[in-house]
Length: 151
Image (tube, rainbow, N blue to C red; front, side, top):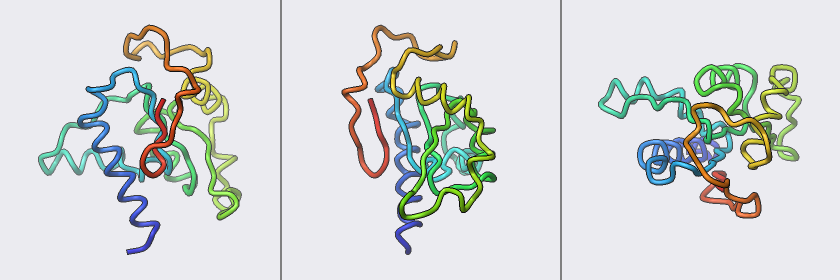
């Protein structure tokens, strides 16, 4: 197996673990999955048809960073989780982000709003966000596992 395949598999496992158990335990936690979580949200229908959990509703506190993917994958993820949950990321200097022409395919206004929300900067919070008191401070951001960042 290649490193890329293993990274995608790990991101899918991290997303699955968080959506099936982590969100219930941490309802106010903001989470950022790198690599679009290995496209895991796009597998929800398949998992459900094989006895898995129902596809989770869009989560306004879960974000997906776009590195390594092109317009087709990013568009499918935007449709599945909402454009307001996507954050821009690249694999620079390893890969040129222009290779996939991703910059022209992104909704930069939505990415700007998502970035402010992911970092806890004053921005409108979606109506379906869990009730919360004060958000966790940005200084509490830390890296978890391979690519998942939580606050």
